[in-house]
Amino acid sequence: TWVEFKKELQESYIKALDDELGSITELKKICRKHSPIASDELKDLQAFKREFVAEARSLFKEPAVLSNHEAIDLFL
Image (cartoon, rainbow, N blue to C red; front, side, top):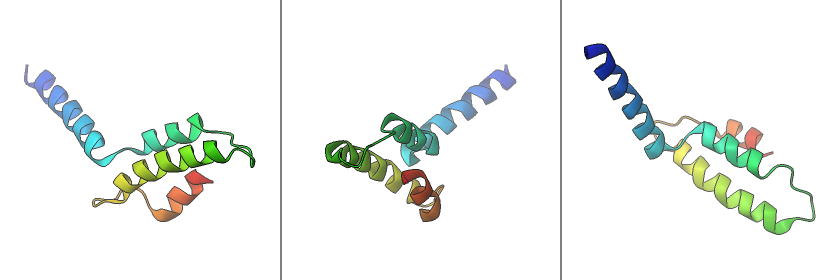
């Protein structure tokens, strides 16, 4: 039916857009995965930073879905 087709199309588009642009949900998952990090766990901090920055960069691209302020709040 048209309703089913429309729903499937919208879900596919949202998933494709998330894959292309990244997602704030994924960024939050990265934060949870690496939390907490103690001050003496440099390797863990570096791994977190690499993952976080890679995902955050995709969210800064136009159309930006994440501000620098929001990214800093999540990172800290």
